[in-house]
Image (cartoon, rainbow, N blue to C red; front, side):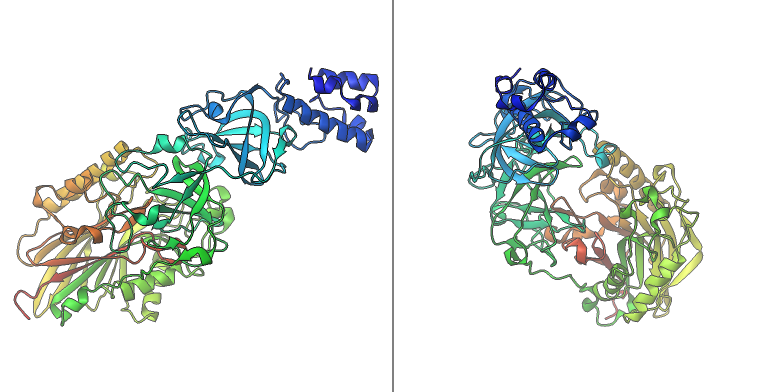
Length: 638
């Protein structure tokens, strides 16, 4: 029994029986009727005694938060266990050695949310564990700069939406009741660590996971941050990536100022999330912030990032100078009569339907979108006409069926294709025709109900489709994934007809798989493409092969090596300098996932048109850049 309770002057406010119960267990709730009959002074005294009890650290019996509440409170009752420093609670590993146990600890509040706050020990390093922790205490009244002591139960917390996909990706939290919080002083300096020059240096060649774990919950400062991963379109808080110190020593840069993906995956990139209500302008790759970004280290979906509470709004942003690229291949040919232009573009789940929330998986709002109303379909059409310069053929991926993400029997995408074509015509482009072969309903990956597929847009005034040639390339390697679409086109110029056997492909993603599993599947699919190219090798000067689309594998990975093995295909992007060789950005690394491989006796030039991956997702059409190739059939003609 705490001395502060046994000698409390509040004893005089209660009957002997009531006081006996309080002394026996200050956290035990009074019956509702008895509590309702208490005077305001009695209620205040009970709450005060409970706070003192927690602060004193003598409670010994845990009352589960889902079974009982502190009298007059709104949360669970927790007892104060042993007194530990925060870094002792965190421990040196990824999990707390005190998981499930009650502790009392103390520190400086560095950031607050409605559900809790971040607490950090001042002047303590990270050698023995993170000196910071997130305290869950709905209804707390602390503010940044408060020095507090708090009692609660340690929990390795996994957010509900991650419990299936990342069950082992937990964050050490302290579950506490506001009554257990004692504010000792206010207005204290906020402890923080500097990431980068003059502070904690991140490795460029090895995982920084353990280092970030030693900073879990800590307030950090990123000086002179440069954006190397444009913001996504998650509402309220958007994700991006930066490097500190103006990008000094960050590694090889792309033509737009991003980071060329290196052999180590650029582990020194810092993932950030920030509120965007005051950032209604593009935050593209190459943007900078006038002042440092500060925030707290969190872990989401198995990746560490810094939650920046106040990025400073538009006034703190130095916009990137980049603009969406426009292909220049056409300028190389004064007369396109003998040149065929073939492009590729991942449309990122385009459809024409605003889904009915009741008909999408889980009735989840994230499965409802409006590609037409939000302008994304328009932007994609503009990119085909303007940025890709109205190619003769466009290999497309991720085109959804007519009712988008709704779970139904619909697999037909004719309305989606036609809407794209009409937009292109409105913008001055050609009236394309389209071809696809519908997937098996809800069985080939992508958003549930969306039935994404591969297909082609083609200009019938420039090429002729051999209708009987169209088929889906079936193989067990593509089980559960999008099947490649094969189609043969004829291009007649100057009395000569070229025959082009083409594929539009969208191979298995790495998402939701271990690197080993993803690599195994992608290599198996690449071998299917390689075998197809071997079996369909051009038999003369006027036959040609081309495979276009999203491989979900980088240029230097085994899958791409397997696809071109034996020289049956040529990887066209190797013509380009490394700083131009990318089509997507992930986690601050820019690399090529969208490839064009070909076999032909004529020159085939390529351009990766950087019109999406460098740009803020809120203002772009897709997360992939376009690819444009020029097949030069002049054969000595000027």
